Image 1 (tube, rainbow, N blue to C red):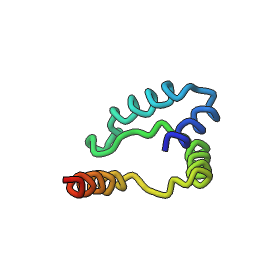
Image 2 (cartoon, one colour; image 1 turned 45 degrees about the horizontal axis):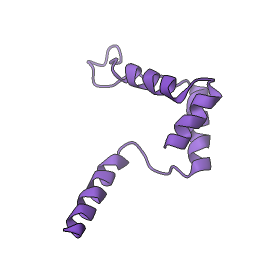
Image 3 (cartoon, rainbow, N blue to C red; image 1 turned 135 degrees about the vertical axis):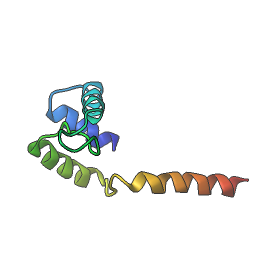
Length: 82
């Protein structure tokens, strides 16, 4: 994931910190007319296309909800250690 973010930042001529700040700040803003159920995306259509390409290049084959599985994997490995 970090490689994809670094690649996108480079394409946008930004530092990784600047890109992360932009993403986080935009995520705090609700989409107008949506009663705050969604957040704005800082990514243009060309950004999203570049992200898809970078994800393929770096083998990032998981989606946004995969983090739930990551948490389960950590819990399971902690149980195995005890």
